[in-house]
Image 1 (tube, helix red, strand yellow):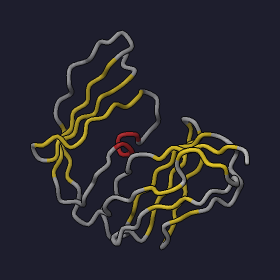
Image 2 (cartoon, rainbow, N blue to C red; image 1 turned 30 degrees about the horizontal axis):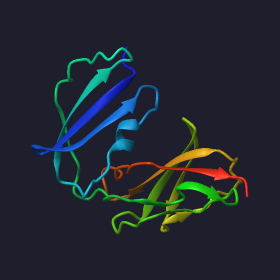
Image 3 (tube, rainbow, N blue to C red; image 1 turned 180 degrees about the vertical axis):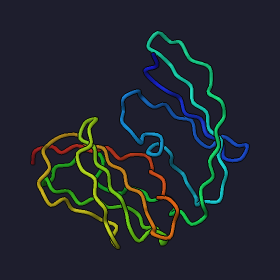
Image 4 (cartoon, rainbow, N blue to C red; image 1 turned 90 degrees about the vertical axis):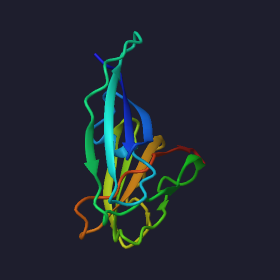
Length: 165
């Protein structure tokens, strides 16, 4: 049984992404790891291969393809919080804007479990209503437009931890 998977994506005929994903990380992981999206209209080909703890790899999967529509929001970059923070337990999440995304979807994991997900309209920041426990977190954000046939892609995650003040 594989404990890790290598995902390989070409944009056209050029390598666009190669990353490792741990088994059991959660649903939607493939879309979370894709970064560097510069808009739609491009065709992509992808393959996946398993790896187990004894160092054995599976054969590469058959190639699969996907195309992103041109009106899908582009990349949105998380800006803060990141690293280790001495702060209150209600951080302000801040990200870059995308003119094609009037809405943003924020996903926050505490450890390896989903802690909070929320939609934000017309703003590039979010402050949780409730106090968050001192812990290590990972977060992602992506844009969404009601005129797009899909959501923007997730960027690489941001990691941060609270330290007591």
